Each structure stands twice: as structure tokens, then as C-alpha cells.
Image (cartoon, rainbow, N blue to C red; front, side, top):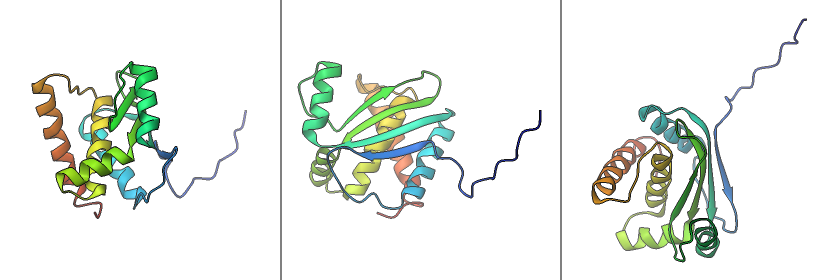
Amino acid sequence: MQFPELPLDDEPETFVSFYFEDVSFDLPDQKALVEWLLAIGAEEKKPVYELTYIFTSDEYLRQINIEHLQHDYYTDVITFPYSPTAIHGDIFISSERVAENAQTHGVPFLNELCRVMAHGLLHLAGYGDKTPEEVRTMRAREDHYLKNRETSITT
């Protein structure tokens, strides 16, 4: 059987998607952001199957927290992993919580947003944040990747 040749796309298929549920804001230079996120996966030696970021409001994410984790409080990120051996999952992020954290820590919104995006990806790569040691390790990895990001994404 002869198979037809399919045309090659100019752009490779991306495994990273961004959705806005009930909020809207500028997500600058998405191509560079995707490259940065894929580089994190590569450095962590985890294949990226599919990585979906869903940006929401505080209330939307609080409802997810209540329904799926039985936690009745606000949070900045909730990660749903679909594979223990690869980066494959959904990461819900409250842009309102990120904006408040950015103001509290005196950093630009995009810097804090990238920290939270890396945090979610690191959860999918197998990092936890339940113990003080896990928190220190997670923060060190976030800092490492944020430094790498500064050379590829403008703030």
C-alpha cells in the first residue's frame, strides 16, 4: 500500500497550550515561553507529552480546590498529573493570586507568573512541596529556571 506524502508544517507541533477560563491578560511571547517550558522538561529528563495551562480567577480555582482536593481556600496553582513518567497534565493558575503575590514580593507579574508555571511543571516532573526540604528543593529549581528564563523572555 502506498501512503501519500503529507506536507511538513513550518512550525513543529507544540505540546504546550494556554487557555483563559474566566480571566484575560496578555501572555507575551508565547513561543519563547513554550521553548522555556520545554527546556525545563528536557533538563529534568522528562518527556513532555502534553502540558496545558488554564488561567483562571481566584473563585474558579477555589472551586476546583474544593471539588477535587476538598480544600476550601484560595491557591495560586493546582496541578493534575496524567503520567508518572512524563510531563503530561493540566495546570490551573489563578492570575489574581499571581498578581497579588507579585505585588507582595515586589516582582513583575510576568516573573511571578513564570515562577508559578515552572512550579506546576516541576510537580509534573515529580517534585513535591509538602515538607520543608521539598519546599527548599522546589524553590531552588524554580529560581534556577527563572534565571534561565531571563535570557530568553523579556519581563
